[in-house]
Structure formats: structure tokens, C-alpha cells
Image 1 (spheres, rainbow, N blue to C red):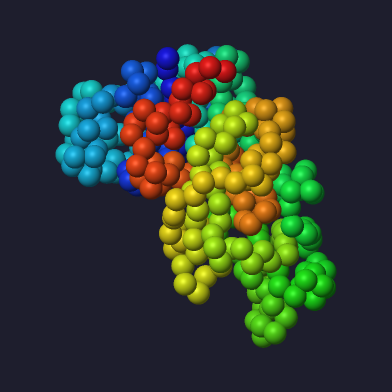
Image 2: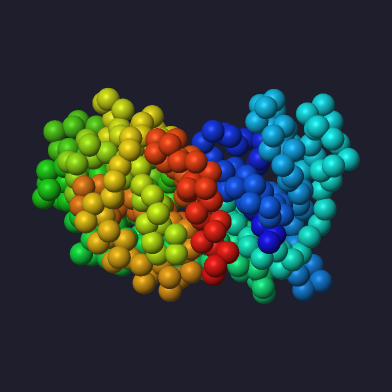
Length: 330
């Protein structure tokens, strides 16, 4: 089969962390054709959604890992870093030439992201992971509001007064921007904190509503990331906050530990399964703190390589290999 990956600049990939890199490499090892394009190259011509692609072969992955080389600028691979300059030409291709297209651009879901995803929605044959329409209408934080029985007390508002009243009611709360990632912009609010007014005002300065949730003490033990593919949990990891922080996100300095899903985790996955399948969300990173669902990550879920390492999974049983195999059956 042929796989296309629409993703942020490949020169910025962290080869030992990025899930997109792991997925691309897994598809190649399994013998599939693998192509990469930057989302800025998406266009519509002659009744087709097209993009500028480079084809990645096994030598490309080996060269990148052995030499730790970086691709400096898309779409041209500089001659001094290219193992074979004539081997990786950039070419315009119709996305419907591929069986599976991964949309792996990181948030924020801004106007640029929206337009690029709308273009992907015009594909007629290719299976786009995740479904473009679902990417556009399902905010990763707001989507949990569809499941009131699975989440802690939550409110979304632009009112400073309502936010403070929420903190008064519950004593301690977590404030989140709706378009952030990697733990950015998340604050724990307590009334005795003299900075509470400043935090709320600064957070509201963007002009967007904020999500505020009752603080879940179990965050001290870690934030669970469940990897869900086609509605089934295939792996998990515990992201533990660093000392003095409340965020388990790896991007915010958290560490990861082995984790085995429990009965409540599986209840949460079962509770959102129909929603995921109905919306053609084939690959999700479901976040759980204690007994509560906190986010449903659908743009570019991560932690595949971390789970592989901590569970000592070989390639056959790796997260990315399971995902590739599962998607091929759709």
C-alpha cells in the first residue's frame, strides 16, 4: 500500500520521540510506499487535491538515524546532507493516489490549519487519518463535554467572575486554553494565590473562552495517555509531573513510567468508542487523570516511542506497527 504523511517540517523531527517518524518508518519496514509532504504545499488543481511529496526509502531512514542529519528546508534536501541528491526529488502528486493519508500537523488549530484540513476533506478515495471534518469540529478539550459522566466538574467561559466563583466552589481548579498543546497555558488556581487575578486576566487576553475544571489530586501520581485505535486501547503510558509542576506532559518536563490500564480506564474507552467510530477518529490519544477523562487528542497523538521503550516492545509488537496493521483493515 502507499502511505502519505502530511506533517510539520521533517527537519524538526526528534527521531527518538516523534510518533510521526515512528509511523513513517514502520510503514516502510512493512514494505509499503511512504511519502512525506509539508502542509503548506497542499493545493487544489484540476479537480484534485495535490501536494509536493518526497518519497522516503529505507536508505533515507538509515541515513537519518546513523548520521543524525537534519533536513534544513522543505522541500529541497541540501546536497551536503543528502545521501543521494537525485534520489529524493520533490514531485506533485494527487492525494487520491494513496490508500492512506495521515494528517499529522501539530496544533494550534488556527486558520491555516483549518484551510489545509478543509482541502484534505476534498479527497475522494484516500482514507484520511483522522477524518478532516472531525478534526475541524472536535476540539481536543471541548470534545470531552460530550461525556459528562466521565469527566470532573467542568465549565467553559470567558467570564473572570465565573472563573473565580468556580475556584471558590471547589477550592482548587485547573485553567486551560482551548487551543493549547503540550501543557502550554495551563494553570492551577487557588484563592490564596495573590496572582490569581493576573493569571485569569492574562489567560483571557486572547479573547477566547477558557476551560476550567475541578482539580484532580491524582495528577501527582501522573497523567495517563491511552493509545486508542479504531475504538480499542492498544497501549498506555503514565506521564508524571516534574517536582513543583502539575503538568505531566513530556513537553512540560514530565517523565514517563510503565502503566497497565485498569477497569475504569477501559470503561472510559468504551464510553467514547461509539463517538470515535462515528466520527472516523481512527487514532486518538486519550488522556485520563485518576478516574476522569480530561482530553481526546486527535490532531497528532504522541507517546508511541515512549511506550515502546518502557515496555521493551520489539517492532512486531510496537505501537506504530499495530496502528499501521489496524488501519490497513479499515
